[in-house]
Image 1 (cartoon, helix red, strand yellow):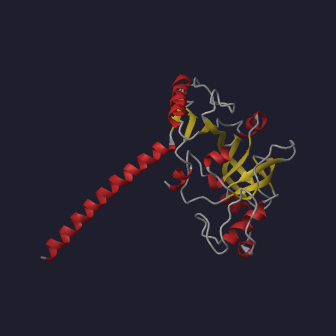
Image 2 (cartoon, rainbow, N blue to C red):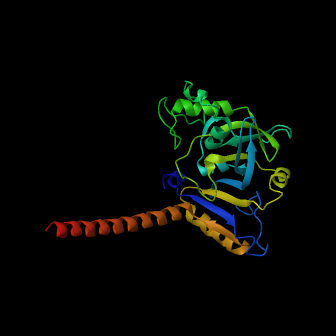
Image 3 (spheres, rainbow, N blue to C red):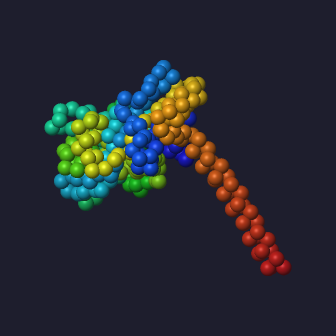
Length: 274
């Protein structure tokens, strides 16, 4: 709930309906946004993702590859711990941003660097914990977290054999903060291109989504327009803040049930004592 709240109240997610159940008749989403433009939209990001085998020189992880375009990381509320965002760059030197969980799995080593003391980051766009604090769900000190992120920067990884250079590492997320199908902490993010998409996802149909952040005060009109477009083209439209409200209602109902059960239990103890 904290993670969803951090994304703000103006976020709308546009995804494809079940492509298989629809017999392939659903209009496929494209990075262009398919009409999702206008001065009432503050930012827009695209993601296309599927499972992938990610390797470094010392380790391998069966996680998720996410191809992104636009302001996707900022719309999702992801913060860079170290480095910078990915740049498509030259074909022979593709770049990627990786989640901290993946950085730890691929570059965590034998633990020596976890005890390495490092100065706090001061560069723009970097979120750094105080030395001695813990980050997210890692249980590691802030210095250890930064050391692992530093160890990953500039290193080469491969996604299904395709080489990438690690340009940045995301800050660790709260435990179980998975939204829309994959664990962002264990994903690798690269800039979308048709050639790269065709190569990485040639053996599967990836999940595609467009994340939209509406301008403050104009959420309702953006929502109405996107929902109309979704109905026309067969897209699924999700409102994270609506899901958050649903979770809140469920938690409230659960609390009521638990209080009732506790009350019955206390009554039982009282009768037994008498």
